[in-house]
Length: 391
Ligand SMILES: *Cc1c(COP(=O)(O)O)cnc(C)c1O
Image (cartoon, rainbow, N blue to C red; front, side):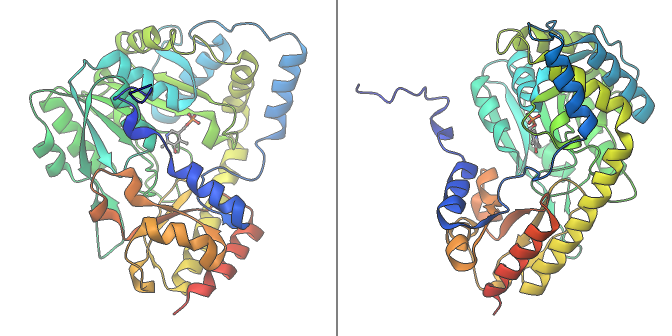
């Protein structure tokens, strides 16, 4: 074969940093704080409901838009929590994780050669999904505040990046990898730009329940003039510590949801009904469990951030999610990718460099991301090991 078999659209996306760092962690026996999945299980009753559903024959294709119990539970959740009114039949679509919801939204809503704004650093699947849709991404960096260590929305930079072909913006709050939870003020300013330029917003809110700061999570769809242009996306994986389930959903105006469904039906058609059914149970009944999880994660965040600071990292503020970012320069390192490739050998811990989630690596090479969604003893072990870096 003369040409590589992979299409030119996908050629830039052959390897992921997670595969590389996880392989490295396994080879060296490092504590893996690279990949963001919990090492404890979801709510017991949720798992029982799924098992019972499987035993009771929920084993054939689910309805295309998702099992009705879950669509109703999602609609009730959006109403009770955010005051968003949704018709479960036309304004809620169940997907195979948030990942499929994002990809199907982009395939359904943007034309080839349209531009899509991604805020950098971005979750890695966004760039690949934009490419699969044949569109072009326009990266706009978040603003790192040197005083507070917080990452904010740079709305002026978003405005400056918009051109005549810009069609949509992918938003992620609470933000992976930065741990920022954008405020109502920041989102209102962003919303104004979206209305002004008639942009659609694909809003990835998978960490909506994992917020440690008092302001809480604000869905951009709740801001004036935004519901009609926003596909809001969430999933069971992060909220209920079941990242392997891949039960997600997209909500919004019927017109946008129908478009996403048109793409989704030819990607996976449907996901597992039993897991959707159990997720409906969890959305209705497991609120206290989720609140406990959020409190535990806030403690873990503090524990890891304090430990990293003690080792000498420049720890950034994390307001939610599974992640905290840290500056490696105070420890005498300059490049996050090189640092992460050495870290398992140097200290027996794995992390991921933030620069791989951007199109402008120079700007982000001082930062690495650590996951704290791990058992306390795992975090303590990681912090003990990292002490080897102390200058
Ligand atoms: C984990 C994660 C996802 C993936 O969600 P799934 O439901 O597993 O597909 C999407 N977006 C962000 C920001 C994530 O961190």
